[in-house]
Amino acid sequence: MNMNWQELASWMVVVWRGVSGRWARRVYMLLFLICICLSAVLRFRTYLLTRRIQVVLAGLAQVRVDQTTESQLLKAVPDLVQYGGDRQRRASTERHYNVTISNDEEGYGMLGMHWSRSSFSHSGPSTIGTARFIVNGAR
Image 1 (tube, rainbow, N blue to C red):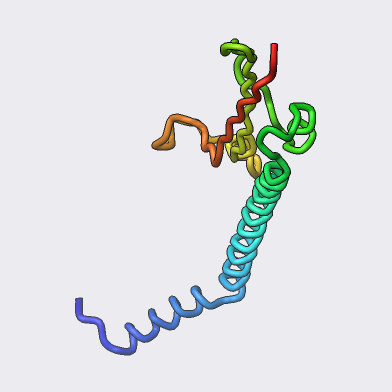
Image 2: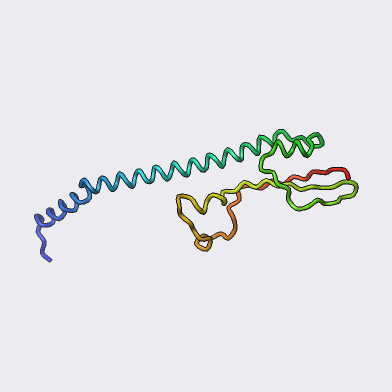
């Protein structure tokens, strides 16, 4: 394997032209644009999820203990769902309400890709936050 400097230089020129040629630059630009688009999609999804969280927090800011009625609570806090059934406690009835904000509902169909849960290390949904409310009402 006795290669002189001219043969080595000629191979380096061939490699350099292949790496920096017109088609290579097009491929690099395409990969760069794919990265930019993917980043924009993920940032937009994060923005929408943050808006949902802010709307729930704004509704919770309007709730006052012993002043807000159940109907006002349901109007003020969006996505509020009754959690479980009514529970009888002494002279009142308790109703439990729940708000769950999760990124699990959109994640498995993003960009047309479907991932199986077995390929990830966690087994449950990706829940960002859960809030529970107990409303006491007289019987």
